[in-house]
Amino acid sequence: MNIMKIPSEWSRLQGESGPPEPQSIGWTRIATQTLHEGRFLTLCNDTVVRPDGSQGTYEHVAVNDSVRVVALTDENQVVLVEDHFYLQGPRVLHLPGGGCGGQEPEVAARRELEEETGLVPEAMVPLAVIDPLPGMTAARTHLYVARGLTPGTVSRDDTEAGMTVMRWPLDTAVAAVYNGVITEAGSVAALLLTHCSQSQHQSTT
Amino acid sequence: MNIMKIPSEWSRLQGESGPPEPQSIGWTRIATQTLHEGRFLTLCNDTVVRPDGSQGTYEHVAVNDSVRVVALTDENQVVLVEDHFYLQGPRVLHLPGGGCGGQEPEVAARRELEEETGLVPEAMVPLAVIDPLPGMTAARTHLYVARGLTPGTVSRDDTEAGMTVMRWPLDTAVAAVYNGVITEAGSVAALLLTHCSQSQHQSTT
Image (cartoon, rainbow over all chains, first blue to last red; front, side, top):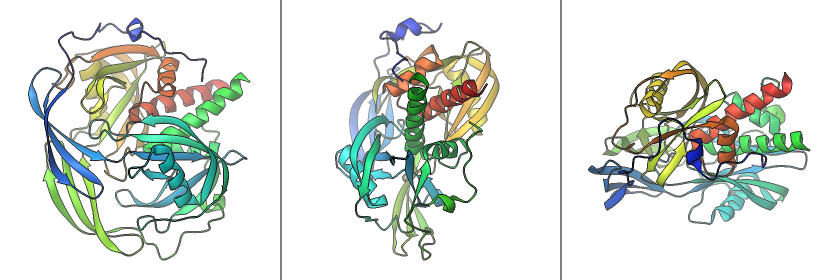
């Protein structure tokens, strides 16, 4: 993907709407209030000055960052897991991953991969970081590619009972994204980024 | 992308972990309690039976679905917007879009595109639906491709002051995803899906 460059000056590519309005200075936080502190998430209500200068409030959710891992075998198969999601219903297919729980993202990625699939990677390479719902939470999802998979120890928590592990050709997993079978945002982004990189590499070598 | 098929029976591709554990029947909701009802989001605490049969609670956020639009010009340029995000800091680059606000997703996609960019599309074609944070919210992000763009009326709200509009070649926007400049999950997924589809089409025709 290194043949595509983005311009150092975005303004050179701007459309007809012109430069930013000079009076806009972004958001300012005046105060923050905790509305609820739960086991996994905290609901906050901040007093803010909006980009147009008006004052108001902004509710947002503080929650741990999360990770998703594209674990690839030597045959370019990707490891997928399937389990029950409370809010989405039975049997959701997705990449291994989960909440960082206060760990560094790479440590969490290695832990989640082994807990859910019983696989320990030799290499865990950062792929991208995405903002799943930037209007509601500052939490980010860190995406990795794992290679050199060797057996470790499965250790699932009480929300993951009934989880199964599959190995699909990467192309098949990408087709499942296109067909709407895989919909979790981190899995969608990580699978497409990996697939596009491989396609780009194949077409230039 | 129609050359790739996923199997009708996923079990045929399963790895060595075997079939689902038969005792797992997924999650059951026993009761739901509203902890906070705000202008944009509602925080709920449900009493549940987990997949392993144990009882517990599950906190989640109810919020409107959202939309993101890949608006393409006849020259295969994509329309991007840049504005201040309260939780991410100044000048976030992303696809036009936002909350559905109770509207059908396609109606919301047309409204958001015109409000933010002043463009009215002839065609608004569904691309995919993703789950941005399925562990925390059931809200989905609906992705569209818009074509046949004609001038309409910009109408931005008080959180969008200072928003600017750009038109970039699609390849440049995809490079911005790879380079970590575009990180909003719906924008990442929609740009990569559109790019991979075009690349696939070009390589098979």
